Image (cartoon, rainbow, N blue to C red; front, side):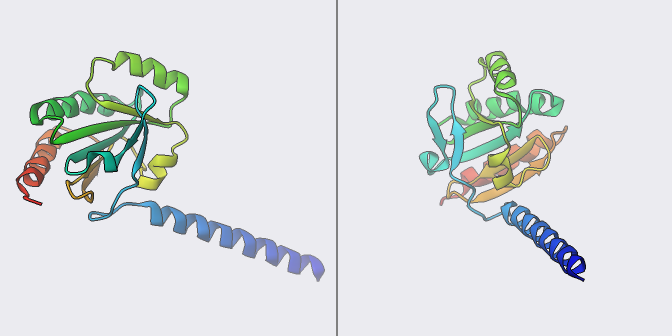
Length: 174
């Protein structure tokens, strides 16, 4: 009888633990209109990168990895967009997602010509706060600090869609 009660307690404990894990993950996903986490990592110089430092600008946050071909296609496009529109209007933060420090350092050297802010999310903690489940995962934060767009993947129509979202936000007077 005592072992049955113990087994039931174990089952209840496991069930509650699973329920908490599911709810925590569900709470982490960002929806349009949400305020994303402020801290985005450290840049190449070791300086903290915060959304609040870009108030009044549009911020594009892209979670990527070196082994992800669509990610490596997307990064130069994001740099081109940032260069065209100007860093006074838009800031791109490219967050390397779940790669070792060694892998990140290697790819960071290869991408050094890109004028993007690079940060590193080795354990995926930042990605989980954003609700990243696949890469590339792109988030666009509007001038008011709220999430205005997000997408997973990168394809032929992605650039046009991103540019349209940015133009709409830039024409917004807020």
